[in-house]
Length: 337
Image (cartoon, rainbow, N blue to C red):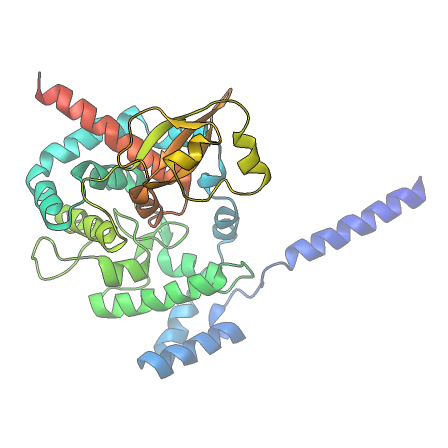
């Protein structure tokens, strides 16, 4: 027994050491070799001042919770949990209020970019609760913690950190004061820095782009984002589907569930749309969502994939769609008496 306890203790200690060393432990980012290399790259490529960047990175705080959250985002939850969080009565009611308040600007965005007002409003509702929650992390901390970690997504976040420094220089923002999500997303639409630089627009014609406080810029920027990602005006997002028989399992067993198919092809596997789809040869994808007692099935069109360019999750895109639908229904009901 003593031998067993001793071995167990050694194994436990080894695991603890391995876990503790799974991420770099330096508290001063400016002294790290990978950060120094990044600084030199920014100096050479974009003519930043090395002393200024070293001073900036010396203030970056280690945020272990950022790494934990990036490893397990809400999109890993089942649909019934995700839906409860994001397609809520509060977001529906406040979505109607937001739409009524900015009706003119939303109509202009629809006419300019071809993206429905309901999708724009729902996106703001899900991303930041209409500006209530824009994130409590310093963006420089979030991006640096992930960019210089051992996360497989570190290269992406190093690029976003680069974009963030360029953004703050261009917009005359203090990089130490810009707040955002644990992943470094900024403002009411929760744009990553690259999206902010390339897809945000001065829709209010104020002379600057403000995604934190200027709702008109926010509306136009989200609409422009979706258009640039390929939004097709007046085309559907999803349609409910019915599974008949067990032929559907063939697609699961052969890893074909994510493939785009025509409705005719899907019907061969017992997947039938609950509503009429035209034209029948349009390519769609199967969406399977986990409910409490069974799964629900939908067919996703091109615009569903466009929403996923905002967040690459079926749950996210479906939440945007359903919230937009409920907001539209409630608004129509209230406006029509």
